[in-house]
Length: 304
Image (cartoon, rainbow, N blue to C red):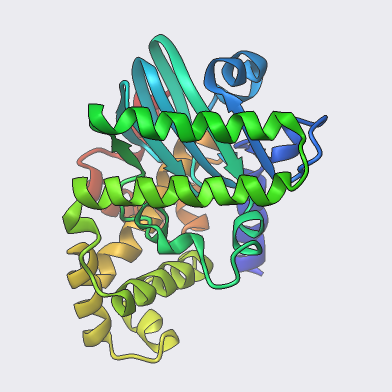
């Protein structure tokens, strides 16, 4: 019964942060699982949706060619500048704060829109999507911006022209954009993508299992057993791939959800501790402070 009550409370929290879907943005377009727009038009048209902290149920990619400010993604702040590119996966919470008027392009799509078009390709093959631990941002070199900008523009033009073979053309351009951006990403962040494909796949499966079970299960052994490998070997894979321990990966996911609940839900701090599977608030507060150097209450006051 305790878990049922906790889960019901958690579902209530999930309703607190808006989860946007593609149909909210461009109803008159024939493609229900893809959207593209000039960034200035997108922000003006959807100003009531996009400036407050929110989530998406789709993959999102944004290129800035002008403007400055801060893009906050799951409580990490990233600088916005010309050449900035951001990649968001479903479920991540983000918000904007601009110091000057931005320009660029934005597109987003469902997982099926891309993966059903390419029978042997997954979005997780790209380094900016395969792990939560990889930075969701990239700053292009000045020599790279023009080429990437032209491809974003081509994608946006194709979206609004409604020509024959439109969906095939769009998925082809998306694939080219992701390949070019992945190359830029690898060149700029080599340490984040050096691991073997087998290790990367194991990390992806670990993160997927954590996403399903972290409210109830927080031991590294549980996840190693689920993946049919030893705890020692799983720890070796995680250490090699993202330079962390398995326990740190689990703890970071719990901590992220704690921050989301503290800032974006109406639950009491005691209820949040219960939702996250802690025996009491005192222990939750001790763990939270050891990781963030601040108490849950101080963290809440800082954001609110």
